[in-house]
Length: 146
Length: 140
Image 1 (spheres, rainbow over the protein chains, first blue to last red):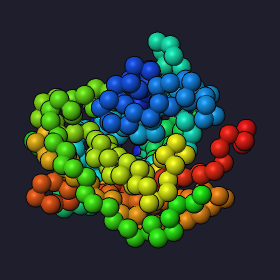
Image 2: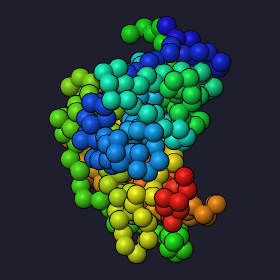
Image 3: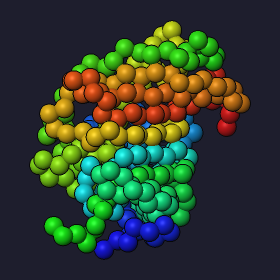
């Protein structure tokens, strides 16, 4: 059971991103920019190769937040800067994205408690999101009667 | 060329209504490795689908002067009133909050109000778009 106290480290979440995921995301999100599926176009604009959508990486962070919150739909705020691209090679293993979180604040809220988390999101040891942050609701008594 | 100086403060018309279906949400969740079961709310970043449509409107408006292939998504933030659910019919109305020039780039701060069919706010999606015009090829 997670203890919602300031400074608590949350379970590390790791994700694999392949070219197939990016193609799927392009369709699902409507962002069909070819730098996310064509090496030729990506290189023509100075990138080392196809990169993940910034929003794809943020979606992985959101998935980590849901897992910490214990259920989807509890997020009140979510955001980050897109500071460094996640290069996704054209192979079966793709790129790894790792999300960690530290509790920064726990506040009383009419609907429970509002937890604010500072994250780090890395790929190949490098931070790919700037100041990723989220806040989400947890129930007042997690061990709960209920 | 820099973007239109009068852009700051401008609000664009709302996007065409977008129907949130179980299939669309399931596909978005599957694409992002997010667990999803029937009846669950949509993944937290799902509203980007309508917010992105609003940004496209800004970026393709000929009066604004943005060169689409020179735009980088610099930052994205969401503030939620409630989660998106299957059955919602969403629109996004984008306002340009700020416009700055830094080192030859236009830094465009936007916020899109994502509303349901009652007109109630579902979330606010804030994006920073970085537009580097003119520094074509040449650089490296």
